[in-house]
Image (cartoon, rainbow, N blue to C red; front, side, top):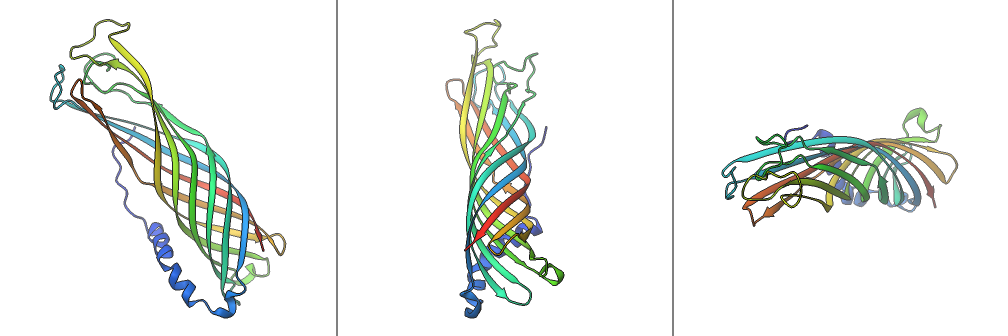
Length: 277
């Protein structure tokens, strides 16, 4: 379980933001003698990630007429899981300095993901099953990352011996749009009075699914080894911080509000092959 989290920008995120803002300036300052040596590239990528998701729920009975009128219950749970995927990428690299191999590149990509984080809320209330009206029911939930789209800037070079090895190292920062799905399975009492029967219709059950759309910042480092003049093998480590997805489930017929928040982030390894034209 996890309490509410507040994200504080890290130095690495600041670097990623600075790179995004600096791209027009870098491009403008790039010597035209090098600009004609810029190279387009396309490739395939395989991300392997550790996805961490948390489910935070509040049950607000301020305006309800049930036995828990005026009470507010907070509940949360979290889980992490390995996710995998496959994707396509395309970009353009601009050399900045010949001797050091300094370069900057801009890249777009599309990735499809698999893997599911899941868990169950402990439930909060004063009944044995925590499933009476106005309580936080012990819902079973899952979070699945479906697909993502990204724009990434990379600043790298081949200092020293790395140049003779046809190898470069780089830092990266970018923005991603992430599509995910949240599913919630519930069972509880939606009456104005406590339910006493263990059978239907007093207790209701069901499943809610919601599509989530996150904006996320990515930062990391990578290394690229040229296998031939046109083919490069790249390995990157990345950290992606999602924004929060929030909504309120209104149960107007019983006067209960249920604000909900889903947070997520992932840390992973991305391997790719890039073909340069």
